[in-house]
Length: 449
Image 1 (tube, rainbow, N blue to C red):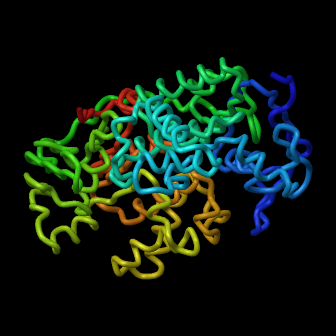
Image 2: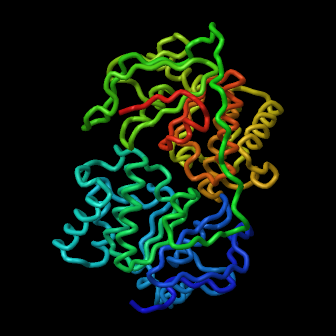
Image 3: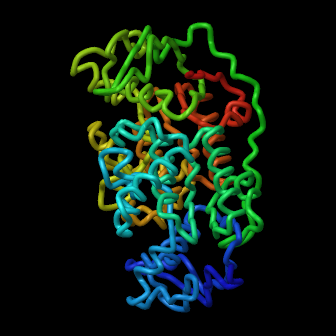
């Protein structure tokens, strides 16, 4: 292996078309064969760096070289992109096929490999991430964590010289995360260069060294374990599921005879491995899905029929696992205001709620309210999507992995906010793959098998 730079940034600056500068005079190198973690707070430009390395963006100033090749040289574009395997923060950004096996095969096929070689690489990559049994499944039936594993398999199947993972384990359960780290260690031993973008200190510690972008590390995300709030004896049951089962078309049931109840003023964490049905559970509460069997009740009323399901969306505020799926307006303000406006509130009431919600999630109102939500970083998009749910002030909050992709300070602020909201009487149900969240919050755990 040649002892050269796999990645070289020299005095690099980058600004987006709206004039927003995210990198300013950045210089660093990664040697070929190194395993390096890239850390920094939300919005500091980590994902931008990944795209610059692969030639998907070009610097506004300075020089970026990948394996000695200038990313601004069009003649180097194919060689650079062939050498780089990248797994984006949002797996759906790179899923292009309907079936799992076809999606993983997409990259190798575009390299012009023989059919037998493509099949071999697909099997090898899916086996590595524990998804070989899902080769024939429709990617749209997969959970967010399972889609993330497919995206990782797609990158591995390319046999890249450089593997870049942009928060690629943010939605994986503990077992899948450890499996991924084990894969990375093996690839590193074989000489592959790895750049791991991560907020989680435990993940960053798996690397040989860490490059921090945008200043010193955020303070610890630790939240003091609070005493479990004693609910009033007359606190109503906010959400109840009785013997609920659900299966997606052509698939075996993801939920089978599930019964649970959560009271107003309670904070509960829903845990379980990828594919256990956690996201499906929240969609059933919100009325987006209807159970195949059993019943969902909100404050004692069955959520049956179109009218009741429509009302459920004003009772249960749902923040999706992939927040960009619910961002659609031209500005952050309009996106957060969408729900309150549909409730028939006055313009002053809408503005008050939008300002409160954006501030509550830790976004600077004056800096973001006029911006397109699609210009935000992944972590900032997650905050904006959550703000849109909070602005509705629904009595129940159903939050799907709300802390995934957040830096440590933002995660601490979010967990403290959820504690405060439940203390004010909201029923807060949070899906998480991180068992530590249950201890940090001192709340009840609802574990799905």
